[in-house]
Length: 266
Figure 1 (cartoon, helix red, strand yellow):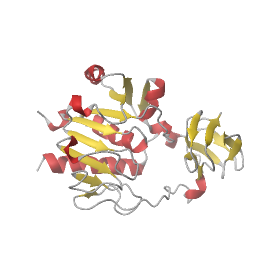
Figure 2 (cartoon, rainbow, N blue to C red; figure 1 turned 60 degrees about the vertical axis):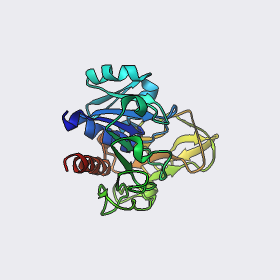
Figure 3 (cartoon, one colour; figure 1 turned 120 degrees about the vertical axis):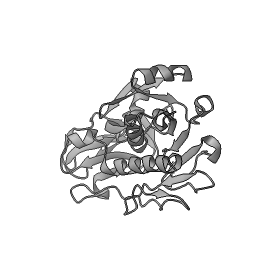
Figure 4 (tube, rainbow, N blue to C red; figure 1 turned 30 degrees about the vertical axis):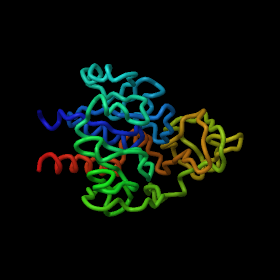
């Protein structure tokens, strides 16, 4: 069997998980994503998790398709699409018997991934210890080590600082100030002015901190908790970037591919 015919289960369907899935799918791995019943991705322009709501989601030429059961997965692969299934516990691994399992939930802690889940288990970001939780870790922090394969120890602590766009970092991101229902009539890619209401949580207006375009936006109608990331503004106004995989995510995906090659091409 060719390495690129290996079955890969990726836990998570958000921005990072989707970028990794995209890279491996393009390299002809048999990838299956698992997601929660109500995904809360903010970078929805590049998140395959949107297929949970809409049935399909395309990111840079790759289409993810929602499946209801394991029996549908080979058919979707045959359509040259990427299957995604609602399976927060990733129980599908017991049916697919993946060669590789990647925890890309980005929860900053291990929510149940085990070293015995596959021949190669990879954890993305903090919360995983090599040799204990996973075989290898890939660095996800915005630092000089971004995308590095970690063979011993764990990833750096999360700084919580967003990537810089137009010289701005935290200033362009909004988080919820309370628990409640998130509502918006804006769409990703919409232009906004500084101070313009973008959405509301529990009836309280959420206003754009700066002008630009809406680069990332939580789906309307989602119940959120205080501190939940809601909106991200691109001050440069680059609409195309809303639907392009970020350089940071490509670096992480490259690290994952390196980890796979290191393990199986040794």
